[in-house]
Length: 398
Image (cartoon, rainbow, N blue to C red; front, side, top):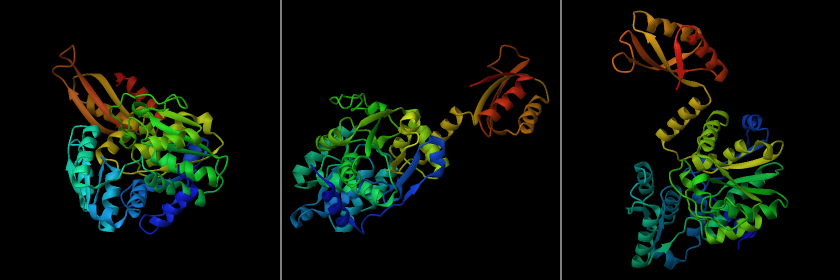
Protein backbone atom coordinates (compact mmCIF):
# COMPACT_ATOMS: atom_id res chain seq x y z
CA UNK A 1 0.00 0.00 0.00
CA UNK A 2 1.37 3.40 -0.95
CA UNK A 3 0.77 6.72 0.78
CA UNK A 4 1.37 10.42 0.33
CA UNK A 5 5.08 10.17 1.11
CA UNK A 6 5.56 7.64 -1.69
CA UNK A 7 3.91 10.05 -4.10
CA UNK A 8 6.03 12.97 -2.82
CA UNK A 9 9.18 10.87 -3.25
CA UNK A 10 8.12 9.96 -6.78
CA UNK A 11 7.51 13.60 -7.62
CA UNK A 12 10.99 14.59 -6.44
CA UNK A 13 12.49 11.65 -8.31
CA UNK A 14 10.97 12.52 -11.69
CA UNK A 15 11.26 16.30 -11.39
CA UNK A 16 12.75 17.75 -14.56
CA UNK A 17 11.81 14.67 -16.58
CA UNK A 18 8.08 15.33 -16.72
CA UNK A 19 6.20 18.58 -17.16
CA UNK A 20 4.38 20.18 -14.24
CA UNK A 21 1.24 20.71 -16.29
CA UNK A 22 -1.17 23.63 -15.76
CA UNK A 23 -4.10 23.45 -13.37
CA UNK A 24 -6.82 25.81 -14.57
CA UNK A 25 -10.39 26.68 -13.74
CA UNK A 26 -12.73 26.46 -16.74
CA UNK A 27 -15.35 29.20 -16.68
CA UNK A 28 -17.26 27.82 -19.68
CA UNK A 29 -17.36 24.23 -18.45
CA UNK A 30 -18.51 25.52 -15.08
CA UNK A 31 -21.38 27.39 -16.72
CA UNK A 32 -22.43 24.39 -18.79
CA UNK A 33 -22.32 21.86 -15.95
CA UNK A 34 -23.42 23.98 -13.00
CA UNK A 35 -20.34 22.79 -11.10
CA UNK A 36 -17.12 24.71 -10.44
CA UNK A 37 -14.75 22.84 -12.78
CA UNK A 38 -10.95 22.72 -12.47
CA UNK A 39 -8.87 20.95 -15.12
CA UNK A 40 -5.45 19.32 -14.78
CA UNK A 41 -3.97 19.40 -18.28
CA UNK A 42 -1.80 16.30 -18.57
CA UNK A 43 -2.66 16.12 -22.25
CA UNK A 44 0.24 18.60 -22.51
CA UNK A 45 2.88 16.10 -21.40
CA UNK A 46 5.65 15.27 -23.90
CA UNK A 47 3.92 12.01 -24.86
CA UNK A 48 0.46 13.53 -24.50
CA UNK A 49 -0.54 11.57 -21.40
CA UNK A 50 -0.09 11.19 -17.65
CA UNK A 51 1.28 7.70 -18.28
CA UNK A 52 4.86 8.87 -18.48
CA UNK A 53 4.74 9.85 -14.80
CA UNK A 54 4.51 6.24 -13.66
CA UNK A 55 6.97 5.03 -16.25
CA UNK A 56 9.51 7.68 -15.24
CA UNK A 57 9.27 6.75 -11.56
CA UNK A 58 9.53 3.02 -12.18
CA UNK A 59 12.58 3.35 -14.42
CA UNK A 60 14.30 5.77 -12.04
CA UNK A 61 14.12 3.13 -9.30
CA UNK A 62 15.85 0.38 -11.30
CA UNK A 63 19.22 -0.88 -10.07
CA UNK A 64 22.30 -0.73 -12.29
CA UNK A 65 21.91 -4.45 -13.00
CA UNK A 66 18.26 -4.02 -13.99
CA UNK A 67 19.09 -1.09 -16.26
CA UNK A 68 21.75 -3.16 -17.98
CA UNK A 69 19.24 -5.98 -18.60
CA UNK A 70 16.75 -3.62 -20.24
CA UNK A 71 13.00 -3.29 -19.84
CA UNK A 72 9.93 -4.60 -21.58
CA UNK A 73 6.25 -3.75 -21.46
CA UNK A 74 3.02 -4.36 -23.31
CA UNK A 75 0.80 -1.50 -24.37
CA UNK A 76 -1.29 -0.28 -27.27
CA UNK A 77 -0.69 3.39 -26.64
CA UNK A 78 0.25 5.88 -23.95
CA UNK A 79 2.12 3.62 -21.54
CA UNK A 80 4.24 2.38 -24.45
CA UNK A 81 5.31 5.91 -25.33
CA UNK A 82 5.98 6.77 -21.68
CA UNK A 83 8.27 3.77 -21.17
CA UNK A 84 10.00 4.35 -24.51
CA UNK A 85 10.68 8.03 -23.78
CA UNK A 86 12.04 7.59 -20.28
CA UNK A 87 14.07 4.52 -21.17
CA UNK A 88 15.68 6.64 -23.87
CA UNK A 89 16.41 9.48 -21.41
CA UNK A 90 18.10 7.02 -19.03
CA UNK A 91 19.97 5.04 -21.70
CA UNK A 92 17.99 1.85 -21.05
CA UNK A 93 17.22 -0.60 -23.85
CA UNK A 94 13.45 -0.99 -24.18
CA UNK A 95 11.16 -3.43 -25.95
CA UNK A 96 7.50 -2.60 -26.40
CA UNK A 97 5.07 -5.36 -27.40
CA UNK A 98 1.95 -4.05 -29.13
CA UNK A 99 -1.01 -5.89 -30.69
CA UNK A 100 -0.97 -6.06 -34.46
CA UNK A 101 -4.09 -3.87 -34.69
CA UNK A 102 -2.35 -0.92 -33.00
CA UNK A 103 -2.74 2.23 -35.15
CA UNK A 104 0.36 2.96 -37.21
CA UNK A 105 0.71 6.45 -35.71
CA UNK A 106 1.13 5.01 -32.19
CA UNK A 107 3.65 2.45 -33.38
CA UNK A 108 5.63 5.15 -35.16
CA UNK A 109 5.60 7.54 -32.18
CA UNK A 110 6.73 4.77 -29.82
CA UNK A 111 9.58 3.69 -32.09
CA UNK A 112 10.62 7.33 -32.50
CA UNK A 113 11.62 7.38 -28.81
CA UNK A 114 14.18 4.66 -29.55
CA UNK A 115 12.33 1.56 -28.36
CA UNK A 116 12.17 -1.71 -30.30
CA UNK A 117 8.52 -2.32 -31.14
CA UNK A 118 7.31 -5.91 -31.50
CA UNK A 119 3.87 -6.37 -33.06
CA UNK A 120 2.30 -9.62 -31.91
CA UNK A 121 -1.18 -11.04 -31.51
CA UNK A 122 -4.64 -9.87 -32.45
CA UNK A 123 -5.56 -8.80 -28.91
CA UNK A 124 -3.99 -7.19 -25.87
CA UNK A 125 -4.09 -10.57 -24.10
CA UNK A 126 -2.12 -12.29 -26.87
CA UNK A 127 0.39 -9.44 -26.88
CA UNK A 128 0.74 -9.72 -23.09
CA UNK A 129 1.52 -13.44 -23.24
CA UNK A 130 4.23 -12.80 -25.82
CA UNK A 131 5.65 -9.94 -23.73
CA UNK A 132 6.01 -12.20 -20.69
CA UNK A 133 7.67 -14.87 -22.83
CA UNK A 134 10.18 -12.34 -24.17
CA UNK A 135 10.73 -10.99 -20.66
CA UNK A 136 11.78 -14.42 -19.38
CA UNK A 137 13.80 -15.29 -22.47
CA UNK A 138 15.78 -12.02 -22.49
CA UNK A 139 15.83 -11.54 -18.68
CA UNK A 140 14.37 -8.05 -18.96
CA UNK A 141 12.52 -6.08 -16.27
CA UNK A 142 8.78 -5.97 -16.88
CA UNK A 143 7.19 -2.52 -16.43
CA UNK A 144 3.52 -3.15 -15.72
CA UNK A 145 1.14 -0.46 -17.00
CA UNK A 146 -0.74 -0.12 -13.69
CA UNK A 147 -0.36 -3.01 -11.20
CA UNK A 148 2.94 -1.79 -9.76
CA UNK A 149 3.42 0.40 -6.68
CA UNK A 150 6.14 2.51 -8.32
CA UNK A 151 3.91 3.16 -11.33
CA UNK A 152 0.95 3.95 -9.06
CA UNK A 153 3.01 6.42 -7.01
CA UNK A 154 4.23 8.07 -10.20
CA UNK A 155 0.71 8.48 -11.55
CA UNK A 156 -0.33 10.00 -8.23
CA UNK A 157 2.02 12.93 -8.85
CA UNK A 158 -0.66 14.33 -11.18
CA UNK A 159 -3.03 14.78 -8.24
CA UNK A 160 -0.23 15.96 -5.95
CA UNK A 161 0.37 18.88 -8.32
CA UNK A 162 -3.34 19.43 -8.82
CA UNK A 163 -4.05 19.77 -5.10
CA UNK A 164 -1.03 22.01 -4.57
CA UNK A 165 -2.08 24.34 -7.39
CA UNK A 166 -5.89 24.35 -7.15
CA UNK A 167 -8.09 26.21 -4.71
CA UNK A 168 -10.47 24.45 -2.32
CA UNK A 169 -12.08 21.33 -3.83
CA UNK A 170 -14.96 19.06 -2.90
CA UNK A 171 -14.58 16.23 -5.41
CA UNK A 172 -12.02 14.52 -7.63
CA UNK A 173 -13.48 12.65 -10.62
CA UNK A 174 -10.93 10.25 -12.10
CA UNK A 175 -11.16 7.71 -14.94
CA UNK A 176 -10.42 4.05 -14.22
CA UNK A 177 -8.77 1.66 -16.63
CA UNK A 178 -6.30 -0.55 -14.82
CA UNK A 179 -6.48 1.72 -11.78
CA UNK A 180 -3.00 3.21 -11.65
CA UNK A 181 -4.11 6.84 -11.82
CA UNK A 182 -7.01 6.67 -9.37
CA UNK A 183 -5.06 4.62 -6.83
CA UNK A 184 -2.04 6.93 -6.86
CA UNK A 185 -4.37 9.93 -6.76
CA UNK A 186 -6.26 8.52 -3.78
CA UNK A 187 -3.01 7.89 -1.93
CA UNK A 188 -2.12 11.57 -2.26
CA UNK A 189 -5.56 13.13 -1.88
CA UNK A 190 -6.79 11.50 1.31
CA UNK A 191 -3.79 12.83 3.25
CA UNK A 192 -3.50 16.21 1.54
CA UNK A 193 -7.24 17.01 1.64
CA UNK A 194 -8.98 14.88 4.28
CA UNK A 195 -12.68 14.68 3.51
CA UNK A 196 -12.36 15.20 -0.26
CA UNK A 197 -14.59 12.81 -2.20
CA UNK A 198 -13.01 10.62 -4.87
CA UNK A 199 -15.27 9.30 -7.62
CA UNK A 200 -14.18 6.86 -10.31
CA UNK A 201 -15.43 6.63 -13.89
CA UNK A 202 -15.59 3.65 -16.25
CA UNK A 203 -17.02 3.20 -19.74
CA UNK A 204 -19.87 0.75 -20.31
CA UNK A 205 -17.94 -1.98 -22.13
CA UNK A 206 -15.26 -2.04 -19.44
CA UNK A 207 -17.31 -1.37 -16.30
CA UNK A 208 -15.77 -4.05 -14.09
CA UNK A 209 -16.75 -1.97 -11.01
CA UNK A 210 -20.35 -1.38 -12.10
CA UNK A 211 -21.59 -2.86 -8.81
CA UNK A 212 -19.02 -1.03 -6.65
CA UNK A 213 -18.36 -1.55 -3.76
CA UNK A 214 -19.39 -5.14 -4.47
CA UNK A 215 -16.93 -7.51 -6.12
CA UNK A 216 -15.77 -6.95 -9.67
CA UNK A 217 -17.72 -8.32 -12.62
CA UNK A 218 -16.37 -9.41 -15.99
CA UNK A 219 -17.42 -6.75 -18.51
CA UNK A 220 -18.13 -7.61 -22.15
CA UNK A 221 -15.25 -5.60 -23.63
CA UNK A 222 -15.36 -4.48 -27.23
CA UNK A 223 -14.89 -1.23 -29.10
CA UNK A 224 -14.70 2.05 -27.19
CA UNK A 225 -13.59 5.58 -27.98
CA UNK A 226 -11.89 5.55 -24.54
CA UNK A 227 -9.32 2.93 -25.49
CA UNK A 228 -7.06 4.11 -22.67
CA UNK A 229 -9.66 2.69 -20.26
CA UNK A 230 -10.18 -0.56 -22.16
CA UNK A 231 -9.02 -2.86 -19.33
CA UNK A 232 -11.21 -5.79 -18.35
CA UNK A 233 -10.11 -5.92 -14.70
CA UNK A 234 -8.55 -3.38 -12.35
CA UNK A 235 -5.12 -4.36 -11.07
CA UNK A 236 -4.91 -6.13 -7.71
CA UNK A 237 -2.84 -3.43 -5.97
CA UNK A 238 -4.84 -0.46 -7.32
CA UNK A 239 -8.09 -2.18 -6.36
CA UNK A 240 -7.06 -2.24 -2.69
CA UNK A 241 -6.78 1.56 -2.66
CA UNK A 242 -9.96 2.02 -4.71
CA UNK A 243 -11.97 -0.01 -2.23
CA UNK A 244 -10.50 1.90 0.68
CA UNK A 245 -10.79 5.49 -0.59
CA UNK A 246 -13.21 5.77 -3.54
CA UNK A 247 -16.81 6.62 -2.66
CA UNK A 248 -18.48 5.48 -5.89
CA UNK A 249 -17.82 4.49 -9.48
CA UNK A 250 -19.91 5.98 -12.31
CA UNK A 251 -20.44 4.17 -15.61
CA UNK A 252 -20.70 6.37 -18.70
CA UNK A 253 -21.91 5.58 -22.21
CA UNK A 254 -19.95 5.89 -25.43
CA UNK A 255 -22.20 8.76 -26.55
CA UNK A 256 -21.60 10.57 -23.26
CA UNK A 257 -17.84 10.37 -23.82
CA UNK A 258 -18.25 11.65 -27.38
CA UNK A 259 -20.32 14.60 -26.15
CA UNK A 260 -17.75 15.36 -23.44
CA UNK A 261 -14.88 15.19 -25.92
CA UNK A 262 -16.65 17.71 -28.16
CA UNK A 263 -17.46 19.99 -25.23
CA UNK A 264 -13.86 19.82 -24.05
CA UNK A 265 -12.72 20.97 -27.49
CA UNK A 266 -15.33 23.71 -27.90
CA UNK A 267 -15.64 25.08 -24.37
CA UNK A 268 -12.26 24.36 -22.77
CA UNK A 269 -10.23 24.55 -26.02
CA UNK A 270 -8.49 21.27 -25.14
CA UNK A 271 -7.96 18.25 -27.37
CA UNK A 272 -8.63 15.17 -25.28
CA UNK A 273 -8.71 11.48 -26.08
CA UNK A 274 -11.69 9.45 -24.93
CA UNK A 275 -10.21 8.61 -21.53
CA UNK A 276 -9.25 12.26 -21.09
CA UNK A 277 -12.88 13.31 -21.48
CA UNK A 278 -14.44 10.50 -19.41
CA UNK A 279 -14.52 12.43 -16.14
CA UNK A 280 -16.36 15.30 -17.82
CA UNK A 281 -18.78 12.74 -19.29
CA UNK A 282 -19.58 11.57 -15.75
CA UNK A 283 -20.39 15.13 -14.69
CA UNK A 284 -22.57 15.77 -17.75
CA UNK A 285 -24.41 12.48 -17.18
CA UNK A 286 -25.06 13.17 -13.48
CA UNK A 287 -25.62 16.93 -13.17
CA UNK A 288 -27.47 16.78 -9.84
CA UNK A 289 -24.58 14.94 -8.21
CA UNK A 290 -22.10 17.71 -9.00
CA UNK A 291 -24.12 20.93 -9.27
CA UNK A 292 -22.74 23.64 -7.00
CA UNK A 293 -19.67 21.61 -6.00
CA UNK A 294 -15.99 22.36 -6.61
CA UNK A 295 -14.86 19.54 -8.91
CA UNK A 296 -11.44 18.73 -10.37
CA UNK A 297 -10.92 16.43 -13.33
CA UNK A 298 -7.76 15.31 -15.12
CA UNK A 299 -7.53 15.77 -18.86
CA UNK A 300 -5.29 12.76 -18.63
CA UNK A 301 -4.52 12.25 -22.30
CA UNK A 302 -4.75 13.94 -25.67
CA UNK A 303 -3.63 11.19 -28.04
CA UNK A 304 -6.62 10.85 -30.31
CA UNK A 305 -6.49 9.92 -33.97
CA UNK A 306 -7.34 12.92 -36.15
CA UNK A 307 -9.97 10.99 -38.10
CA UNK A 308 -11.66 9.76 -34.93
CA UNK A 309 -11.65 13.28 -33.51
CA UNK A 310 -13.20 14.68 -36.70
CA UNK A 311 -15.86 11.97 -36.83
CA UNK A 312 -16.69 12.45 -33.16
CA UNK A 313 -17.16 16.19 -33.59
CA UNK A 314 -19.45 15.65 -36.59
CA UNK A 315 -21.48 12.94 -34.82
CA UNK A 316 -22.01 15.25 -31.85
CA UNK A 317 -23.03 18.14 -34.10
CA UNK A 318 -25.58 15.87 -35.79
CA UNK A 319 -27.01 14.70 -32.45
CA UNK A 320 -27.46 18.19 -31.03
CA UNK A 321 -28.95 19.58 -34.24
CA UNK A 322 -26.19 21.89 -35.44
CA UNK A 323 -25.71 19.65 -38.45
CA UNK A 324 -28.82 18.53 -40.32
CA UNK A 325 -29.25 15.74 -42.83
CA UNK A 326 -32.50 16.29 -44.68
CA UNK A 327 -34.10 14.04 -47.27
CA UNK A 328 -36.53 15.82 -49.60
CA UNK A 329 -38.83 14.54 -52.29
CA UNK A 330 -38.83 17.23 -54.99
CA UNK A 331 -40.34 17.71 -58.44
CA UNK A 332 -37.87 17.05 -61.23
CA UNK A 333 -37.97 20.41 -62.97
CA UNK A 334 -35.54 23.29 -63.61
CA UNK A 335 -34.91 25.74 -60.81
CA UNK A 336 -35.82 23.52 -57.85
CA UNK A 337 -32.26 23.13 -56.58
CA UNK A 338 -31.73 26.88 -56.83
CA UNK A 339 -34.96 27.48 -54.91
CA UNK A 340 -33.92 25.13 -52.10
CA UNK A 341 -30.48 26.72 -51.89
CA UNK A 342 -32.10 30.15 -51.70
CA UNK A 343 -34.41 29.10 -48.85
CA UNK A 344 -31.48 27.67 -46.87
CA UNK A 345 -29.27 30.68 -47.58
CA UNK A 346 -31.93 33.25 -46.66
CA UNK A 347 -32.57 31.31 -43.45
CA UNK A 348 -28.89 31.58 -42.51
CA UNK A 349 -27.96 27.95 -43.11
CA UNK A 350 -24.74 26.74 -44.70
CA UNK A 351 -24.94 23.88 -47.21
CA UNK A 352 -22.15 21.35 -46.72
CA UNK A 353 -23.09 18.47 -49.01
CA UNK A 354 -25.77 17.66 -51.61
CA UNK A 355 -26.78 14.33 -53.19
CA UNK A 356 -29.34 14.37 -56.01
CA UNK A 357 -30.93 11.05 -57.11
CA UNK A 358 -33.30 10.91 -60.09
CA UNK A 359 -33.27 7.35 -61.40
CA UNK A 360 -33.71 4.79 -58.63
CA UNK A 361 -34.95 6.29 -55.36
CA UNK A 362 -38.37 7.79 -56.21
CA UNK A 363 -41.69 6.18 -57.15
CA UNK A 364 -42.31 8.61 -60.02
CA UNK A 365 -40.16 9.52 -62.99
CA UNK A 366 -41.34 13.10 -62.46
CA UNK A 367 -39.80 13.30 -58.98
CA UNK A 368 -36.34 13.16 -57.44
CA UNK A 369 -34.78 12.65 -54.03
CA UNK A 370 -32.44 15.30 -52.66
CA UNK A 371 -30.28 14.69 -49.61
CA UNK A 372 -28.79 17.84 -48.10
CA UNK A 373 -26.37 18.21 -45.20
CA UNK A 374 -26.28 21.71 -43.79
CA UNK A 375 -24.94 23.63 -40.81
CA UNK A 376 -27.04 25.68 -38.38
CA UNK A 377 -26.09 27.93 -35.45
CA UNK A 378 -27.98 25.87 -32.86
CA UNK A 379 -30.92 23.43 -32.63
CA UNK A 380 -33.51 26.23 -32.69
CA UNK A 381 -31.98 27.67 -35.85
CA UNK A 382 -32.03 24.20 -37.41
CA UNK A 383 -35.76 23.91 -36.73
CA UNK A 384 -36.36 27.29 -38.38
CA UNK A 385 -34.54 26.17 -41.54
CA UNK A 386 -36.42 22.88 -41.61
CA UNK A 387 -39.76 24.67 -41.16
CA UNK A 388 -38.98 27.05 -44.05
CA UNK A 389 -38.27 24.10 -46.35
CA UNK A 390 -41.41 22.23 -45.26
CA UNK A 391 -43.56 25.10 -46.48
CA UNK A 392 -42.74 24.06 -50.08
CA UNK A 393 -41.33 20.53 -49.97
CA UNK A 394 -41.75 17.14 -48.29
CA UNK A 395 -38.87 17.00 -45.81
CA UNK A 396 -37.60 14.18 -43.60
CA UNK A 397 -34.77 14.55 -41.12
CA UNK A 398 -32.35 11.60 -41.26
